[in-house]
Image (cartoon, rainbow, N blue to C red; front, side, top):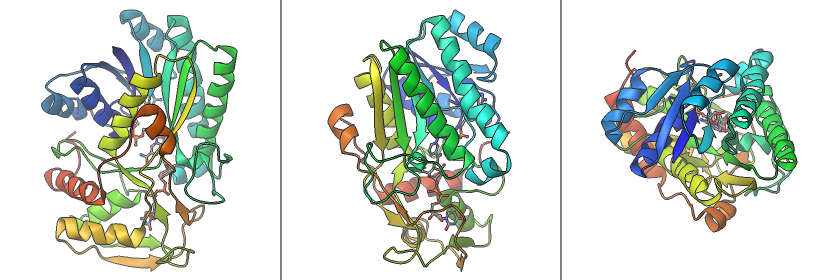
Length: 337
Ligand code: NAD
Ligand code: UFG
């Protein structure tokens, strides 16, 4: 099975490529390296024993896409490529709509020309907005609170309309909760450029001494300890969810929507404590104001993926923190240039 992996040099894409290789699938990576480094390819090869084909280019480049599709018999596309920083999306909405929405439309149009009719799209739990209750299942109403979230929602809606008009296509929307962790080898992990937006990489950089302290965004939420609660999922489990989706529904026509989460929520302070245990380091923190746009709690009802994809998360919080710390220690400044 040959699978075009857009954004395959990024955090989730690179981990997914390793599992594809382990399962005998052939990933072909397409990435513009906007948020990743060429050396990721060396690490994929080191861990998996195989160097995937890599095309450097942009999903908005029609000619480039046509040339890639013309060279291979691609069975399916996993579409990770996109911009993902919520705060940046507020400051640069056009860039986000162009990359995430236009990029996806250009990609799907190229797939249509190449007669490739199967796509798995990286969506997000952000499409549930501020949910009325938890756990969240796939039939909850959707909404957006920022341009990043809206770009994901718009793409979901475009793909839904497109699938209705083209019922022989297989379109899978995977709604990720909060991906964390690293490959157990410590060779691959999350490598945010600049100041991390997300909790885990921030905690990890405090533990290694790159940052002085963590700012905990609010301790007055209606949660057990007052800090925000999220469904953190190990990136290896998340990657396995893509393999399961490819195998179970990737060749089945229809629109398939799944939450990929663990079904368990942890607070910010629980994450800090777990990381301290895993690393043996103290993670200094200060309580500051709430971050605008944040919600109190968010975790998945993962039952649909369990029933239909035969997939569920198996890595616990300890593995998430131990593996993150292993990656951080082995690569204190991330991937080499
Ligand atoms: P990432 O930034 O590590 O990976 C994305 C990759 O896409 C990068 O390698 C980047 O260079 C590439 N890229 C960006 N725009 C491109 C373009 N126009 N053409 C070609 N390549 C392009 O991000 P990630 O954490 O691996 O996330 C992958 C996907 O999952 C994204 O679509 C993201 O929105 C979605 N997602 C991520 C999270 C999360 O917290 N990490 C949560 C929910 C959903
Ligand atoms: N937090 C802090 N300090 C920080 C960073 C985060 O206290 O420095 C808190 C947040 O307030 C929140 C929790 O840690 O309570 C998690 O925050 P993240 O930024 O790590 O994750 P979010 O839940 O805000 O958002 C993430 C991705 C989104 C995605 C969403 C759901 O960033 O892209 O998960 O999948 F949409």
